Length: 84
Image (tube, rainbow, N blue to C red; front, side, top):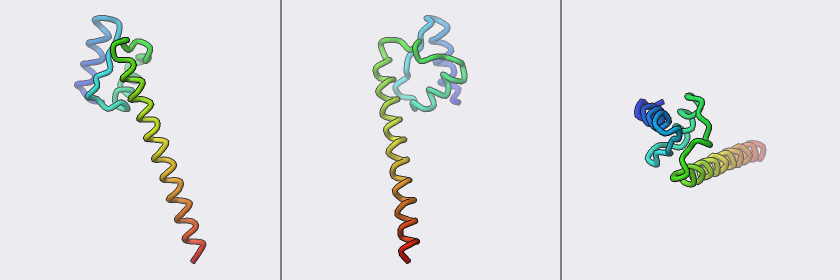
C-alpha cells in the first residue's frame, strides 16, 4: 500500500461519499487499497468511472495474455524435451 493513495482514498470518501480513480496510480494497487478499506467500486465517481473500468479491462487482458504466453512456453518446452 502506498501512503499517498491511502490519503487520497480516505480524503475523497470522507468528504463526498464518493471516490475518484487517480489516473496516475496503478490499477492493481488502487484496487488493493479499495479492498483494504472495504470500499466497493460502485462509489467511484461518475466522472472517472469509465477510465477506471477501461483500466481494469486492460489490466485483465494483459494478465490473460501473460498467462497464455506462459502456457505456450510450458507446452513448447515440454515438446522440445520429449523430442530429444
